[in-house]
Length: 311
Image 1 (cartoon, one colour):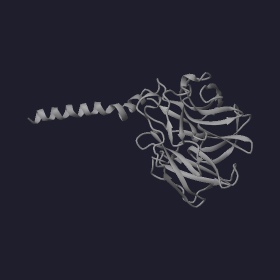
Image 2: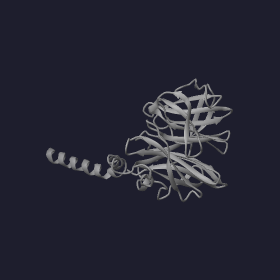
Image 3: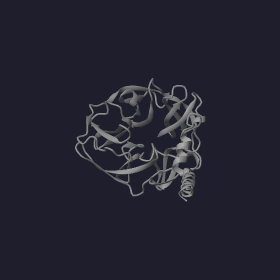
Image 4: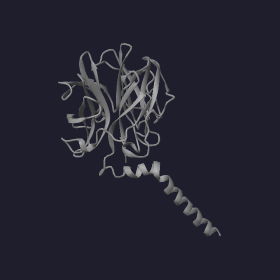
């Protein structure tokens, strides 16, 4: 009898494992084939409100759309409209050197996109191209953690060529997110294993930059320490997007309202609508979604540039 019970329990455990494989474990198995298949691609989410967005069935850009280098995947989209044209910047993961480079695609209607070219590459990894305009000039603060510094680039000219201006902050930081708020510049940046976030502030864009008095403002929390897109003011509320990486890296996207931001204090509260973006188990975003660049295009019209992982 004990022998029969043992085999019965073994069979039940095997069956349960096969059953639950369809969600979390299936994504892990698919990820093991990343060298042969696309991981991340880019799509546009839309909605009547900024925190209830519909994910399309198909992305707008995949790795196979890149024409000037062999790409493994695309991720980290940031878009800026200029002279009737949308300029979309994103990470292109190169097959040749396994480093990220910054690519550009353009559109006049947000529906039809044309890939243009790689606009920035370095002898180290680049991603998360946080592009913004200040005093009539476009700047970019990409992730450059392998260079051990947060670096500032200037468009020369926009949007196809970029020149480094200076190093803003030394250190091994991931996904630095810039904000102009109450006559100061702020940078939110992740370090460690996606569980720690520091804040820095400066009076001028090029510095000097100072560490927040409460650094790290987030510690031991993989659900929100790593930023996931451009910080936006929405209906008078300052919203920070963050990656929830507790279950696995870049699993889903959460939003937090920044309620206090001074050189000495910081506080934020999670949005009631969380998660804002999450994988749905099938299609181009089956397993992960971790980036959102949000724009209002009309009274009841919002779009967001997002990335998704299918494997």
